[in-house]
Image (cartoon, rainbow, N blue to C red):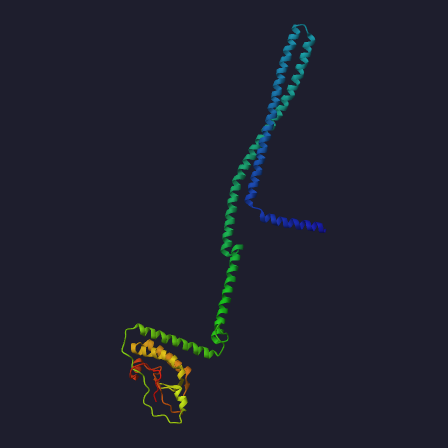
Length: 360
């Protein structure tokens, strides 16, 4: 097979595929019906043309018959006048007219037969066209129903192009959502573990950051408790927590300069902690919040304020060694001490920590 022949076949194959895809059965049926109607109209026009020719021949026949009668009358008149030559001429012309009339009668008969055949053909064709019209409507209805059923089935099963695109978009959206959720969880885990630092937070030990975070929350809770106390009605002043009587510390326990610049705090049932005097302003708001909670008999505020104060002392103070005997400036309740026990521990007026106060 030559290359040109193969190319021609390939073009025809592609063209047929495109035409088959673009062809609409409804349009094809309408076009076929239109062509049949045009054929029927052509047959009817042919019948009309034959009938017109037949009528024309009949008119010519009538004229020949009239001419024949006239010539015969002229021949009789010529004989009456003794003009035999004119009579012969008139009869000759009358005979020619008769011959033509006979020929026309034969043609008219043929025209009539042809007209009848065309009329029968037109009637048959009209019947076929009427039957095709009914069949066309039926086929169009069947095609429309089949097309609608196919479209619905493809839409339900996801085989249609539109539904396939929708399903693919939904799958991609789900994949991206799961990917973003996994990434967010990974970032949160890294931030919680301290591997990644948040923007604006200085780098450092993750344990230190967690302690500072807990301390900040305790300070906020203490300030909130103090604000609540300010809004409550005036209550009796809370007794002051004072350190129990302790024996005087030996002279060699700590240098006089160090004792004058520090504040020793004992947590009931625990160790002693030494705080710098410069940190007293930060301790006083916590002290006020704790005293206010005790005065208001507020268990929740008392637990929050006590926890904040203990965390502050433990995080900012240095533990006093057990082999050193140091007098406590302040005595604080332990975490497991109830509000009633803390109230019983108090004595005097004022807050837990008094600015500038030092007890031995």
